Length: 443
Image (tube, rainbow, N blue to C red; front, top):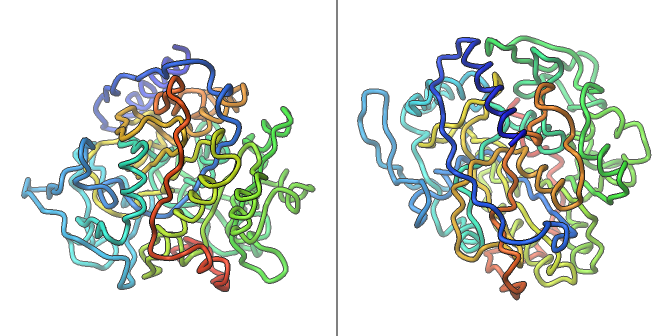
């Protein structure tokens, strides 16, 4: 009750700011059916992909809130055309275009003109054949059709929220958009700066992207003796992950033993760790640029990469005690029909895809529970009996979020794993040279 009350107070505060948003009534929470999560779940793996709205991935999925059409500003009904990973293009998905697309909850402000593309370009859905592994997981396990990023905008705040449950730098200011300059984080070159957003949803320039302002899950996990790894792609020849590891922007991790012990590159090491039963308590898995589902790659390697990780876990010794969450870090500029609940000045942002895979996941189930990125961290806290990262009043979302626990049925016998069929084998990723590009810079 306290967590939901905090969300309500945050929402009322936003209305008082004059955001223009209308009240949102969350769908009822479905409680988990038995016992503490930690009795059954000893490993949580968070697989992060890039830049896809829920509609772009799962339009037409049976039982999901995902019609095959959208609406233009004038009420014109627009069928979602089929799009492919190729050719190369990019949609502007920064904070301002996100707000315009949301359009006070009307969800009719999407416009390719923001990106120099035809106006109706964002109204598209990926070819089902190209994302067959995702649909296979959705059919077998849980598809969550109300997962929202903590904040409007692109990857950087999304990734921060997935390790910290917050993007807030102070009571009236949060990280927004991607830093200008590079590489990101404490290793950024001089002159690199972040953008921030204030209570009036105005974007301002900020300081250097090396943060000490908030706690992360690394702090909590370390304090309670829970192992963790952040599998990130190689960017530099001498040290992987520097440009695309969100923990590079957390000073307490970057300048400690964690940087070499817990930030693991290449990210393909997760395949070996899963196969040998060496998964830590909590894992984050970040893709190489070419495997990320980002629109600018023109590559269809992403779904098979995720399948490779899931298959390695599913056929490994840790399967019976593992929960896998596959989530896309932001909407990528694509159309979506569901208005996100507005809980504070940051968002949440436009809906993204989310899959929950586990031997205890409800079979063939679409969860309509309202989730945000803090829900993933709250589930970690449920599994390991951990306290919230911080109070809602300080911007932490795990304290207010619904846990993912309702997606599980712990009264059922753990399910045997069935391999997820994919276009490319794991060897493709083990043998491929790293692109040396981060999944998302938008520069």
